[in-house]
Structures are given as structure tokens and as C-alpha cells.
Image (spheres, rainbow, N blue to C red):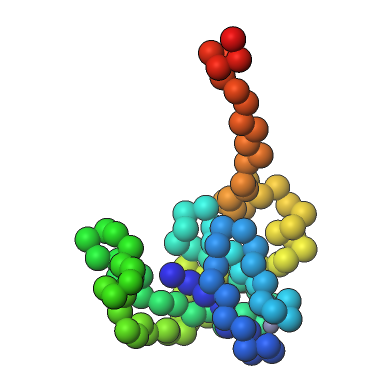
Length: 116
Ligand SMILES: [Zn+2]
């Protein structure tokens, strides 16, 4: 699980597949569509939490089974899973060419069977 730490406001933000900002908006980041590589920018310091501690046998660990502590570590800024991006470019370019997820607008309609 990747997060960004902002040295400006000391916010810690979990990355998702859409652009997320820290409290002061000086740091930002998002996951690429593969959910593994991330694009970050601004003052972001890339951080990670070992997913293994939260998952046991492929399922999410909750409640009393959750670990009492997890290790938060800094990801090297030159990691091949981290890419520094340009925010304006990201917000203007065709997101599909960048491998960034777009939440599709889904319209739920009644099926013809139900309307008869
Ligand atoms: Zn900030």
C-alpha cells in the first residue's frame, strides 16, 4: 500500500487510482491502472505499508486479528514503481494514454423485464 507524506502539512495520504492531495494541496499522487505503480508530484515523499500485515490468506484482516503495529517505510524516490508526474499534464492529457483509471459514468436502468 503506497502513501504520500507531505513535509509541508505533515499529512499522510493513501494513494488511490484518482489523484489525491494532502491537506495543503502541495503534495499529490495516484496509482496507475495496474494498482502497483504510482505517479506522484509536488512535495510528496513516497511511503509504503507492507500489505502482507493486513492480509492473511488473501483476505483483509480486521478487528482483533489486525496487527497492533505495522511498519511505515519510505520508498526510494528513484524506485521503478514511483514516477514523478506533472499535475497540469495529468489533468489535461488523455488519461487512457497514461494508464490512469477513470471511473466510468454508469447509468443503471431498469431492465425491460421489470418495466412490463
Ligand atoms: Zn501538504
